[in-house]
Length: 116
Image 1 (cartoon, rainbow, N blue to C red):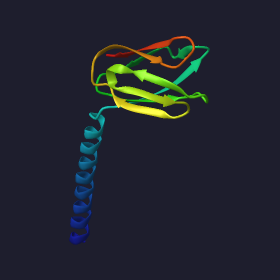
Image 2: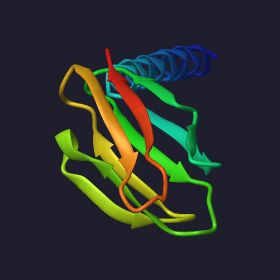
Image 3: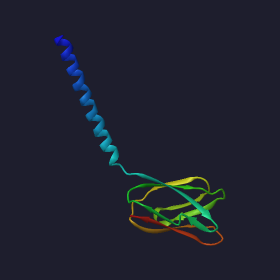
Image 4: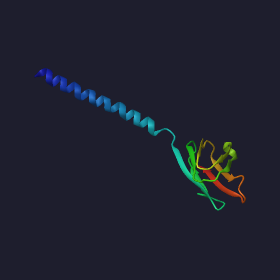
């Protein structure tokens, strides 16, 4: 009977210690930077959304929702790519407001990326 009580006590303590390790892992995950996914459309010469707000240090994934390709240009982050229904990904590591545009559109299409 004594051994049963001792074994149950050890089992309870081992379970309590295991829960503490899980809590530490959750805290570590919460401090990592986030990924913001933005669906971007080019409709009648205008970007939608026209203004994109992200946090400095976050990874930004822009998912392009068009079927016709065009050249997406975001100079400050070194991006100049032909896109359609694909995506680009970068880290917003510089605070400020930056214009993005369609380089080969018939009419200028310009939007703003704000890194806060």
